[in-house]
Each structure stands twice: as structure tokens, then as C-alpha cells.
Image (cartoon, rainbow, N blue to C red; front, side, top):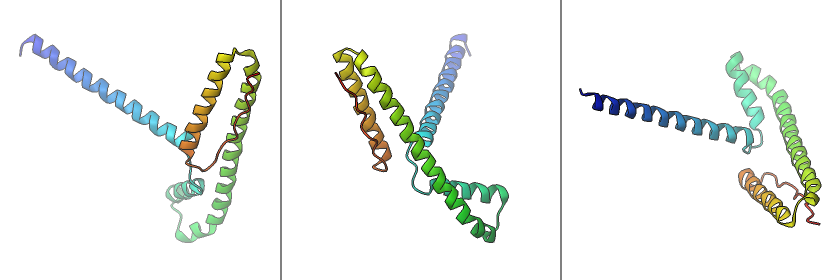
Length: 141
């Protein structure tokens, strides 16, 4: 095997390796983003807790029946906390935009409105109607 062919093979293997790594990073990032920021169906937290506890503790069906009401109550509380936190984050960002808007030029204020509208559409699309955020009140004056 001549050295030119050897270097071409090495370069090919390196490119395939890099392409696989890039694909892995992309898929991992997309999956993590969906898990962290995507919509969670009602009861998701409770179901995840039940599955994890049953698997890790090797609970019997009788034990699962006894702890299910506790897990359901905890899951409902966690969903409420998640919703409250999301609302607080959106309110905080909307408040900052209201404070920033008077310091911007009219063109920048328009861009800020466009950013907010894109975010609102993205959020509504990804939540599939589960929750519609309140529109931030950005004043161009």
C-alpha cells in the first residue's frame, strides 16, 4: 500500500469519526432540549416517579398500589411548581422588556416586538395548546 492511499484512508476514517461525533452531539442536544424545555403531558412527573421507584426499589404490586396516591399527589404538586416557575420566568422577561423598550430606538423596539412574537409562536407551537403565555406588554413610546 503506497503512502498516498494510506493517508487517504486515514483521512476518510477521521472524517467518518468526526461526522459521527457531530451527529451524536446534535442528537443529544436535541433530545436534552426537548426533555428540558418541551411539553410534559399531564401526569408525566408521577408516571416517571412510579417507574423509577418501581425499578430501583423493586416494589411489589401491593406496594405500588399503596404508594400510588402519594406519588400522584406529589406529581400534581411538581406540575404546579413547574407551571408557576415558567410563568414567573415569562413575567420577569416581559418586565425587563418593558424597562428596556424606552431606551431603544424605534427600529430596535420593533425588533424587540418581533423577537417576542417569534418566541410566543415557538412557545405555542411547542406546547401544543397546553398553556398560552400572557403577551408581554412592550410599549414603543
